[in-house]
Amino acid sequence: MTSPDAQVTLAQALAWSVEALRDVSDTSRLDAEILLAHALGWSRVRVLSSLRETIPDETLQTFRALVQRRAAREPVAYLIGRKEFYGLEFIVDRRVLVPRPETETLVTAALEWARQRSAPHDTLLIADIGTGSGCIAVALAVHLPNALVYAIDLSADALAVARQNIELHSVASRVTLLCGDLLAPLPEPVDLLVSNPPYTVIDDIDAGVRLHEPHLALDGGNDGLAVYRRLLAASPQALRPDGALLLEIGAMQAEAVTDLVRQAFPTAAVRVLPDLAGRNRVVAVTVPPTP
Ligand SMILES: C[S@@+](CC[C@H](N)C(=O)[O-])C[C@H]1O[C@@H](n2cnc3c(N)ncnc32)[C@H](O)[C@@H]1O
Image (cartoon, rainbow, N blue to C red; front, side, top):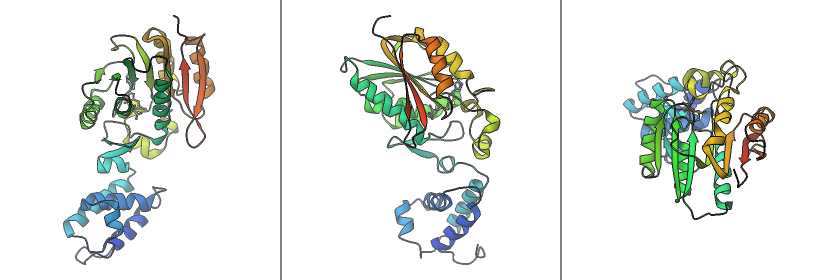
């Protein structure tokens, strides 16, 4: 980039950072615009309409530091401290997995199931296992005013972030945070169990994700299925009759997870739902009305 003392325009700063990020990000231009907007405290639209303006020195230093961290593959969401999920803004940092757009498939499936249930006006009890940032629990609480949600995580650090998000979205009175292993802290059976559990094999994942996001959120054991096995073994006792279980899966895990579901719920109906890219993303299990 131009020498530190020269006046640098927004256009020049963007051009330099796109170059610096080209090898680490498929969205280098977008990343650069978001980071510049964050450093300036502006919207992205304002950045794009002010490209000939110069950047104050202090802001330029801040922006350079952000670009260097992004060049070391840190997620943009950690650098700006937030991420949009299901049309809502979430506070995120390195204590939680960055919410992924694929996970919106699970939220949509949960809302559809809730709208189609036989007693739609009754209080709906939901448990979100491995809540992380709380993105699923909060999105469900926001869209289902008659829902009470238990949001469970083994990581007390993650729950501290989830606490900020339930307060941000004013759902603290209907979302209860519980710390512990899978279903162990759940005080009662629920109508709907949802989970996006750790399901990757750590050695197989993208370097940026592996370097920066919490391994507890990612590590599904040697075959990626370790958490599904334990969660499914305990799920039948945690679900009320006529309930449902929705599990996010990796695109190649539909068959293996469906097999595990059939062992745990021999009489349940099981469907595999695709995400917007057409990849298998959610296993949906509906339990018969009588126990
Ligand atoms: C893939 S992340 C999902 C986070 C969030 N629900 C989302 O969709 O973005 C999995 C979460 O499960 C939590 N976790 C891992 N093992 C757990 C366990 N044994 N019991 C409870 N939570 C666990 C992790 O801390 C992490 O927050």
